[in-house]
Length: 211
Image (cartoon, rainbow, N blue to C red; front, side, top):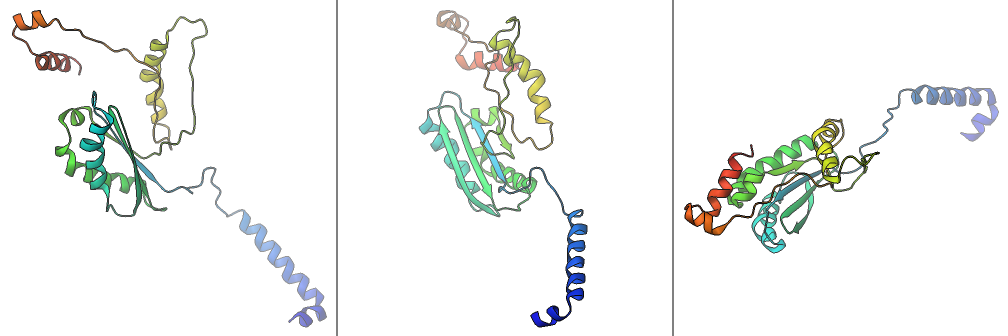
């Protein structure tokens, strides 16, 4: 074959030019993505259990959810973290899995074990997000004239910025590390006894006005 093209150099040049021309034409049709999908999809499940230790969270929340998620279609592996008052489970699926279908599968399996979770966990809600814990961007807001305190800036971010960022296409999770307004209550045991009230009554009254 080499001798064939040596004897016919013009024919060899024509074939080479055709290959180059075909390559140049195909370049214009190749897809280009700024952020190609190269990482396997991750579904994050988080829950809060106020006042519980890490061991209680692990036994009553994390372990129950993680056991139910095992065996989900196309699930590769899970990783979980239990800390005082909160549980976080990451479910990593095989490359090419539709994140929306994976989230639906996780939601369906979560419904099967929701009744076995503590009541306060169900009341606070269990959040399912199509994102990993890897932070891609950190944004800081400040007050140039120092009129706003750290808590006021946190309230401003929570009310106006976080929701706008969550609506951006491709954003899976937005987390705020700033404090917000909160209320602490110190009941008077003597007055509560005289009014025949319990701590549960007080918590129910606060909850009913916190809608």
